[in-house]
Image (cartoon, rainbow, N blue to C red):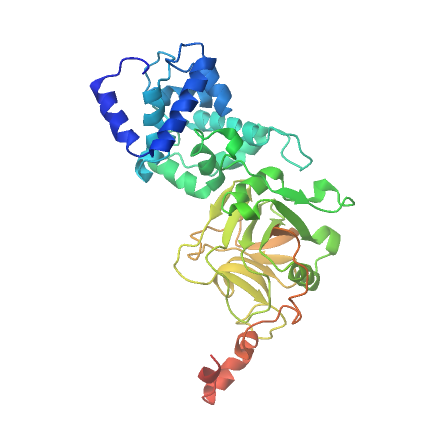
Length: 419
């Protein structure tokens, strides 16, 4: 079928075919013949224009993908064998094979030297594709402006110009939305391509959209680290410009929602960053939470930092404690008074330190920060209501809620009996 193939190609085709079930191969064959018919090739090959139209990719990224899928033959003809080999490698290969394929894909100039201009071209195409449909969410003025926050996450190891394979792998860990998109380009767009989901941002009609920190590009970036069911709708629960700098109001609004949240802050240096809290904000005297939580940066660069497993110091919410060892406020990671991110109960200051919990750096220009804007979004399905929160968010044992008394209980030998 298609052009005559070399012995090496035939061997790769046989190997790749084994990764698919018979039904999957039949589906691929049907797809190929459908596209070949549109290419007017008598069933022999798929043309570049038909390929790019079907997979929804235009410009340098689509051209580069076609070049890789056709094994760089430059004959402008995609055969059935090409399609099976490409999908066998790109979708069913080892992690290393898939990563290597995507790394080559980024070299849209095809000169073998992946650099900044290649990344910029790819990112413009990704953002154009993801945000092609019109919506009312506030975003950057242009894709080029948005591109820069993702470029700033990249490291160019060789003389500050060359983007190496190791640089690429690290970049992908920081930008899961980009990685998901680049890993799904041979999926038919109508099935819901991973890396394309943008949460619908919901807030009151009386709220000026320019006050909202969470741009649609930021939501897409953060959403790359979340499961599908948490990408439908995000609801603005608290905004400091609207609700005032009130820790009490923040806790009341988020407790009523009762689910996971995205906390975003902007400090007076202009940096924007925050954290995803997988559990509700509730009064504790110690760290709590689970490994679904993470920290992120949004501006001037976009990055996500997931838990490393170094410790379980994930989420912090202390209210009305009088001990210096239990700072009142909300935070993520690190340790008490030295968090990965911390917002004090006054809601006008905080800090951010290098953090082993998430493998994150200081998220701002300085460790100690003065906060200008704080906002929090409820993530996932519909608002849960307050029916299951009859204890005003106070959960856990007496010792957990009132850690200040623990040392005294230990002194009289009672502490362990309650743990």
